[in-house]
Image (cartoon, rainbow, N blue to C red; front, side, top):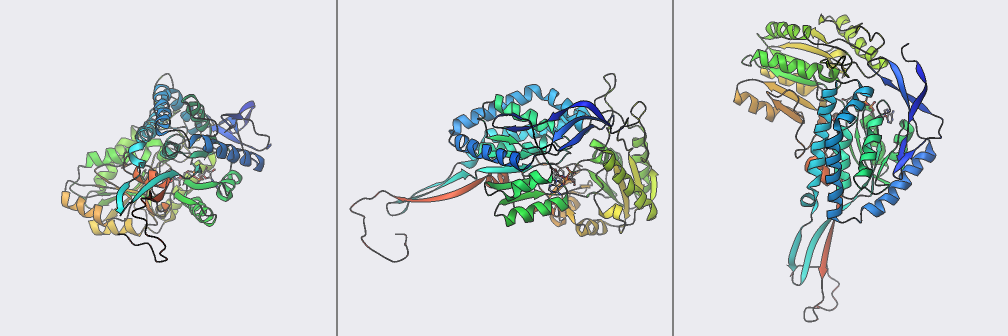
Length: 509
Ligand code: NAD
């Protein structure tokens, strides 16, 4: 029966002091297998005592880890990379069992996270300071990049491996101790990675997993020990995190939601566009912050494009992301039944607002998985841009086509939205693409690339309500975020240069 707890389900615990720590809070949340609808585990929800224990352990871990030499820290990162690379198929299956995405897609997110681990192995070059010899006579000036201390990472359900890995390897490389609060919807990957860090040689306390809900998050936001917060999730929570953590004196980067548009100019290759729209709209059942959710078709191509997308949707296979008899589908279920119903309600809104539902994924059933949280790929045409189904993030396999008469009208629609995470333009006109990259108010742009997630050495982050704070994730921004600089002005006294008493402001001579 759907949503019914199995007897004796495992409880996913915290990771504190380098070991699993069972919770005594008496509070748990269900962890579903979204493909079957069954509760396959419970996750511990921390109480204040467990929050305090996690932070205290991280504080002790920081004292040890921050004193490891650069070479020793680097050795741990290399070992983690090797272990992750060797064992990622196991992690991918674990992600699929709690998230629902198809195994190859889970593998894809691990690979993108692994890229950041690989970047972090090169950290000595990125955090080495600068030295100015004889800046003033007999005086040297140099800068040191030091860790912040205990840093908090709070992650969303949709990338239980990749999003933590956007921050954790860089924070650790810089010498910080990390407390990760994963999503309570798919909490096991964090615990799996904690074990791997230990095996890689990370000292106890340097990486902590605190399972929980708002109480655990608020514990991190208000603790005077925690120096920074890296958050990824929905916009209202990102804004709350930014405001609360800032008020508590912390450095904050809070990445929020998205509503990504693909602008299609009439000269584009419509088959390439249709393939890309389907991949970016329905991959991971649309539960990606870089998913395309609106196709802006500059006329006269909209009718052709709707027909081509519709043809492709008919061929998509929807099912258990783990595969059946060794065959993997294209798309798995949504994360929960509550979320599925929310996605469905947006299609109702679009319909009520006068849009045409060309392909309707509501009430979608997969044979043999009738209790799973499936929602079929949905295509909406002619959605009014005043509809909430157009302006708000849906986070499901729902693609809307909006017909526009010109590049300028399309650009204006993108720039008037409240989000600015990702966008793409499809065209063969290089001049138009250059104009677009200059004029569009979005943080990550694809030119004939539908999901432009930057590589690890370019930073990830959107504009407007898709990112609160000044630092993006990973890349150079990541190293800047997780270090603070100290400038040292040093003089080794030469009796011949000693100038005696002078109360004036120091001058360089
Ligand atoms: P969410 O905001 O519901 O949860 C994110 C985290 O915040 C979780 O760990 C959760 O436990 C915690 N949280 C939830 N409610 C809270 C509250 N009231 N107070 C304190 N903490 C709270 O997001 P989600 O549903 O897990 O993830 C999907 C969202 O994340 C989408 O909006 C998606 O666009 C966004 N996302 C953004 C990016 C990006 O890079 N911009 C990447 C991935 C996901």
